[in-house]
Length: 233
Image 1 (spheres, rainbow, N blue to C red):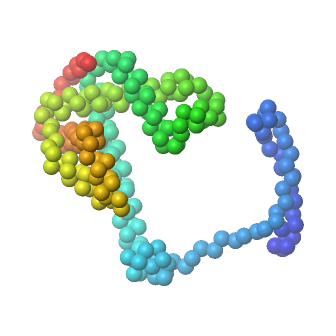
Image 2: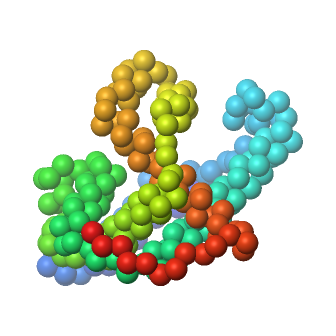
Image 3: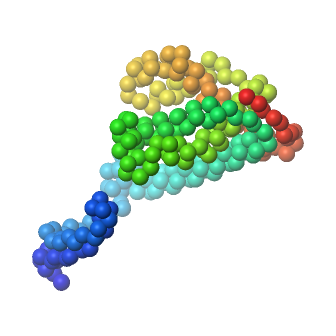
């Protein structure tokens, strides 16, 4: 069949239409144009088009290989950290006030709304599209909320007992790191200068440092292991 024949081809398709009471509908499709994807040659010219920093294809290959290696190592590191935190949380008997779980579910909902760039009206449309109520979605999020709340309480307790602290210089270093990645540095620095932002950065760094401490302990058999404790809130 030639390209001209393909362009003139027609086909009848039977499709399932849930938007029309689940009825089967028939569609007629006509091919009006055919395009062929042509991939560029993997040479030095291509490497320079990707970025002026890549003088040759070999340099580009090395960069890609390094990035893939870094991502794989980061994935392994994060997975190990999560396992360590889960293990420590499993050694604790934590009584969770229901209000803490509901607050965490609210945070999960807000995170999902921000991720999908939805306001309340958009959330309602999303719930309609997945045929669920807000209460049903909250119940689905409950196990994750419980886990996050337990982990947060346990990490706070570990930080307290191990006297993990974050000083102002560490907060400033983190702000410098974040500001250095954007163009509007002055505007972002002003946003991060308020008390709420500073406290948020402090809590994030505290969590990171506490997790790093637990990972160090988990990787060093000579360090004492914690006994099962009860963390009441």
